[in-house]
Length: 295
Image (cartoon, rainbow, N blue to C red; front, side, top):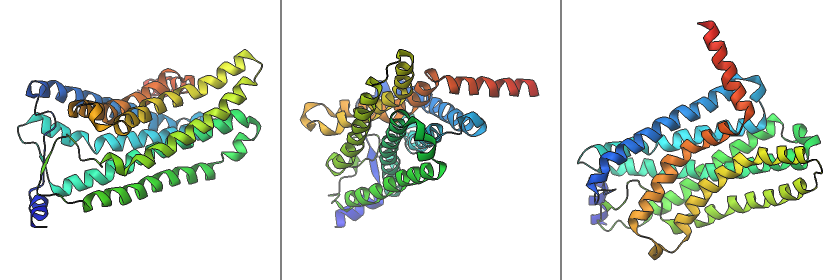
């Protein structure tokens, strides 16, 4: 108990990539670049979804929530990473580690659930198109978004609290660049949302195969492609990292995988939705043209 109190007062040393000091300058630029892209890309999605009346639909409502999640998730991690990569001091206070643990776990868990909710939205849009507007009404959308956020918060309160109850054993050196929950505490929560998503897309595939028109079938598939790509990148990366045996990859590999899903994935989401989405492109062009005309 005395050792644990000492560690609590001292905080932690995040070793990060200190074993590769020659990479730290490049990693600093890498993290800063993707963090700025995340800010610009996700803020753009949020603003155009709010300002353009044509995007006031369930799909873009959930997409705005996803962008807000990515924005907050990266912001909870990137500043501390940049500080540690920039200078010789690689410490984080005990309180700072606790806050980072709770916030990042809550937001990451919420994103898993929200992606499952977005799969449900695509299922209703394709399998029950005539009843889509009635089923996915604004009230239900707000309730589903609220459930996602509160479930993520509850998951964080449970698992992060359990983690903080584990004995520290006086060890204040963490061989990582972030404070994260041990994998075994979070396995169940990682499996449920992907299972729901796969179930939704199973029904979606059956509905698409019944569509006789090639053009209509292509349109139905295109509405799901962006979401499915995001799911594969986000969930696939995390599941690959946490569910494989620990002795099957080195600690450095785990760090780089964590770097990918914490920094790169939040940047890819707005790019994926923008590049393949005609509505978003039109909304951006309309807002830019209005801005130019008002100058």
